[in-house]
Amino acid sequence: MNNRKHLQVWESKRDAAMRKGKPVPEYKPRQVSQATKAQHLSFIRSLLRAAANDWGWIKTAPVIKTRKPISKRIRWLTREEAERLIECMPESIKPVVIFALVTGLRRSNIIGLEWQQVDMQRKVAWVNPENAKAGKAIGVALNDTACRVLRDQIGKHSRWVFVHTTAKHRPDGTLTPAVRKNACG
Image 1 (cartoon, helix red, strand yellow):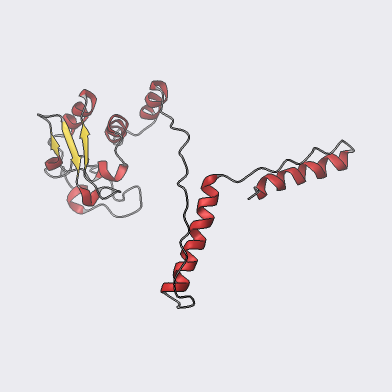
Image 2 (cartoon, one colour):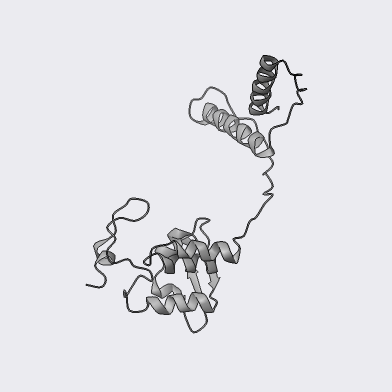
């Protein structure tokens, strides 16, 4: 399967070269990525399943196997990038950002973290399966920085670890519960 966008870019370069009277570059087709192939096959598979299970057009849907694309690149923030990120955050958000950087937890897991999920003596925290994306419990080892951030949050709320007392809306636009909004008075 050839990449259509690559062809469109080549066509625009060809047209520009022809207008300017320059030699036309040779077209070399480029294959689409494994992820693109998997997405197309997944779409076809879902259509066939709907045709069989929902619409009754066919008796059974054929099996279409796809290979999962290999994740090629993992990029870590440098110390300087992390420091710049923390620097540009409002004071109320800095503890959440620092905790995210040192633990690797998702925003929803950090914002929903309760004190009962933290054991400062053993330096561990956990995310319950019902709050984890994969539906499995997540154990988190807490380093000194994470413990310092957590200690700074003690006393701000009896249930939630991270609260923002003046926030009326969460980053996703939903209303903040009154108990968390009015945590300190």
